[in-house]
Every structure is written in structure tokens, then in C-alpha cells.
Amino acid sequence: RPDLLGKGLVEIKQARNTLKLQINGLVGRLPLTDQITLDVQPKFPVSNLNRMIYASRGELINPFFLDRPYEKIKNHDYLPVPLIRSYSAAIRELVGNGVYREYQRETVSGSPKPRINFIKTQQKYWSKLNPTMAVMERFSFTNNNLPNQCIKLAAVKALSIAKNSGHLQECVPVLAEGLRQLENIALLSPSSLSQELRNVRSMVPSFRRDYGRALEQALEIIRHVDVSLNTAQNGLSLESYVISLDDVFEQYIRGILSELPECGFGKVATVDGNIKRHQKHLFTDNKRYQIKPDLIVKDGRGVQIIGDVKYKLKPKEEDRYQVITHSFSYQVQRAVLVYPKPPSEQKSGLQRLGLIGKDNPLEVFEYYFDLANDLDHEESVLRQSFSDLLMQVE
Figure 1 (cartoon, rainbow, N blue to C red):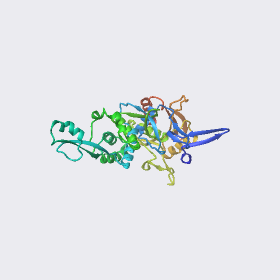
Figure 2 (cartoon, rainbow, N blue to C red; figure 1 turned 90 degrees about the horizontal axis):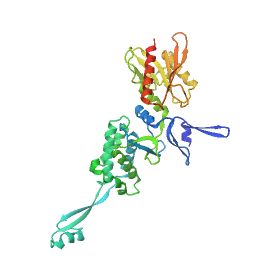
Figure 3 (cartoon, one colour; figure 1 turned 135 degrees about the horizontal axis):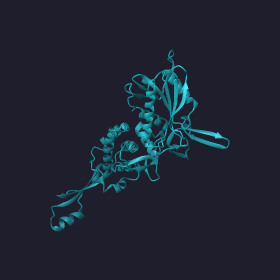
Figure 4 (cartoon, rainbow, N blue to C red; figure 1 turned 180 degrees about the vertical axis):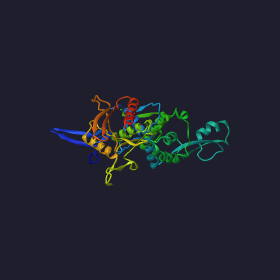
């Protein structure tokens, strides 16, 4: 697909008689051709990927409009971001197609009127010599039915979660509009619906596939189910999210380092050099070029450490040249490149490369963060390493 190649998401390389396919820092389902789709998994536990995305507020997008089955889990810290994002999209489609309505039978006893049910009237009144009473039936066209009651209950719960989560703010107006369209529907409790949930899908015509999708997800929200970002053969079908590990890893590392403790020189802050207000000019006498380091660590003395975060399994020379150039421009004494630790690599944590220059020299480091390890431990070691570097700055 030209769009994949054009965006640099996929590279095809030929080596002798072999065609090599390289995926660049993505996780998710990629449609290579009309016949071939790849499910790309990370090289570390998916549970760690879940945590990284939530901690970094990484973006979940569905650029190829595919579905993918995700593993259902029960999570102590309930924040079903992928599920609620998919559910809000399902609500949008459902409302756009029109809320499902059906005829419901209403039975009334009283003086004879049209639509008399003669069989029930004969059994209940006339056979007992009461000719002035009858059983009448009528049908009302309503959207207050069980499927819509399930969808409304799940939307209320999803909206409550979305309002209190920075990951789901874009879902709030969609869910609110869905509830406005369902305002005439009774809001029942989960316990009152529990006995009927098993058969609710069969109550909607099969041609309303939008309802089938929304109901499946609504029932999981009502049951308090979360999902993991790995695939499962019989999992819950949601939007196929494509995740940029380059972006997630960078935001995750920056988030960890935003919580550095004070080290005797005032409050420590780690800011993003990709944001315009944190950028500076590369040269002192030329304003043509801006530099955008991923990590700018500063305390009461000013900027002390410059860092770049790269989701690469193998460091490259241009990475070192870039962080060295940025560090000289900022006139700092410490520069750090942060990489994920490759599975086959023995070294981990902070690795010193050496000094550059004689007067006020720059000391360059690489840091290898083990995404396959316990993340609490890895985060603690990373913070301590940067705190130690701050203390060593003269």
C-alpha cells in the first residue's frame, strides 16, 4: 500500500533473493495489501505497553478503519480506554443511523373500545356474564426497549469515566450527544438488567450491525470488563488501534523524569523541547535554526541536562551527533540518549560514553531502559540516575 510506504511506517528492502519487510516502531494491525494484513506485537509484555500508553497518554488511532479482537481482562485499576473509545465511535454511528424503535403491545382492561382481544375478553369477562367489560390491545411505537436501555446504561457509565480521564476527553461530547438522543429511555440499574442481558442481541434485527457492535461493547462496560492491547482469538472486537512506539516511549520517559526530586538547587523540571515555548535557536548569532531536544532537565541554576529519546534497538551515530550539538548549544555538562534495552543486550541502565572538549567538557551517556522488566523498578532506577547526574554537575 503506497500510503504505508509514503508515511515511512513500512520499509521493503531487497537483499539478494530475499525481500525484507521492516515495521518502524508501530504496534497494531497493518493492511499491507488487499489480501495480507499483519498483526504487529511489541517485543515486550503487552501489560507493560498498556501501562506505557496510559502513563504517557499516548494516542490511540484507527487509521485503516479495521477491527481487531482484544483480550478481555479484569483490572483492579479500571480504566478501559480502548473499550470506551470504541464504544463512543459505535454510539456515533448508531445515532447517525437512527435509534432503534419497535412496536410494543399494551393491554388495557375497561369499557369496550376498538382493538378488542375477543379471546381474552371471552375468557376473562364474557364467560363470567360480565358483558360491559373487555380486554383491549394496542401497539405503541417506542425506543424504550431493552437494547436501548443497555446502551444508555453503558453510555452513562462510560461518560462518567471519560469526564475523569485525560485519555478520554474527546469521547465526552460524543457520549453526551448519544445520551441526549436516548433521553426518553428508562435508565435501569445493572442488577435489573442482569437476567436479560444474554438475549438482548437477538431483540434487534440482524441488518442493524451497528447495534450489534454497540450492544456487544455496552454489555462489557456494564459487566466492568477491561481489555488488554494484545490480540485474542475469541476476544472483544474493537477498533484496531495503531500505536506509535516512538511517540509513546518518548512521552513515557519524559513523564517519568517529570517527577524528579529536588537536589539542593531548587525545583527540578523536565520539559519537552518539541513544544515551541521550550525551544531555542541553535546558533547565538543566527535565528534560522531551532533545536528541539526531547528532554530539557533544569533546576534553579538553569538547564543542566539535555536528552533525546529514541525507540531504536541499535544506537546510531547521528543520534549522538544530534544530542551533542543540542547540548553545546545549551552549554550544559551532561547529555543522555535514552533507548529501549534490546532483548539480546546485556548492558542496561546508565552507560558512560566519554568526555568531549577540554574547557567545560561535555559528558555523554546512553541509558538502556528495559521495557520487559518490572516497570516500577525501571522507573525508579531511571529517576535515580538522572538525579545523580544533576548532583554531579559543577
